[in-house]
Amino acid sequence: MKHSFVRSALGLLAFALAGAAAPSHASDKTVSVAVTSIVEHKALDAVRDGVKDELKSAGFEAGKNLKYEFQSAQGNNGTAAQIARKYVGERPDVIVAIATPSAQAVVAASKDIPVVYSAVTDPVAAKLVKGWEASGTNVTGVSDLSPLDKHLALIKRVVPTAKRVGVIYSPGEANSVAIVEALKKAMPAAGLTLVESAAARTVDVASAAQSLVGKVDVIYAPTDNNVMSAFEGIVKVAQQAKIPVVAADTDAVKRGAVAALGLNYYDIGHQTGKIVVRILQGQAPGTIASQTSDNFELHVNPGAAQKQGVTLSDELVKSAQVVIK
Image (tube, rainbow, N blue to C red; front, side):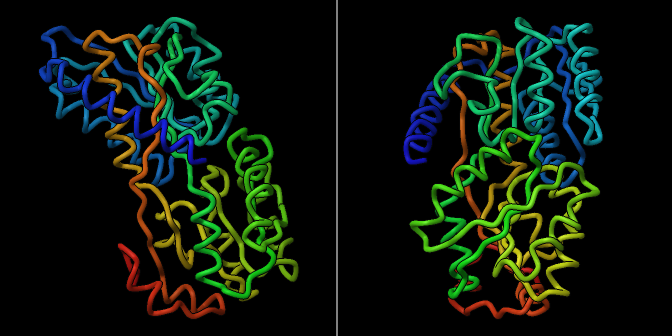
């Protein structure tokens, strides 16, 4: 994990230097950007909005010199593949693919149109790129890699006596599987044991949460699109069973998680948009290394904590950037 963040820092430095040398104005020529997301929920919508706003700030505006299109796969991998084929047939200047299934579909469909992925936790495990360095292909992008060690530390701050942590994840999503494998390796050092509960579909999420009752001290919700699309189902179970929920997506705290340490997805959208601008200005995607972000925020919800059977310490609440009242 450390090496990923070192690479991230170096990549961001290279990005800053390249950005300083690149022209900041948009061309008079109309360009086309096609954006797709596996599903619409607040975090992924924020990425989409950040991309579009960054394009506008660089002088690329829809209806003027930008042909912009967005389509959601509505959580369906088959639909994601259909959208990918449609976009490839239209041959836009850049395709932006938000979340792993959509990115995998687009990368599988084209080897020459520039593809910029976003909100993909592990692009290497997802086989979008071979490594974190510049790919030499048509693919680059921004990862939402989570600091699992910090998440485990947060779990211990929320429930100091916790021993068993339940995780709900999608077995068909490469990033979710990679997170579970990383958790298995990281938990023993934190004195924790992982209890897995798979949810293949959005409709399975609540029952996956229910299966953890009596088996875990805390439920951990990773950045999994199925999980986040049906998050309220987890919260309902957690309140009934008095099991606190800690999440990797800060938006989950507004929706009933006790606490979350996560990225600002609108910022990730802006970071993704900057890469798109570089490509529109002539830089090859294969010369741009994959990036991560280290702009993490702690959000807490004391009211949700009470409903889920715990009281947050004053120290934890005071250290949070956002406290939900």
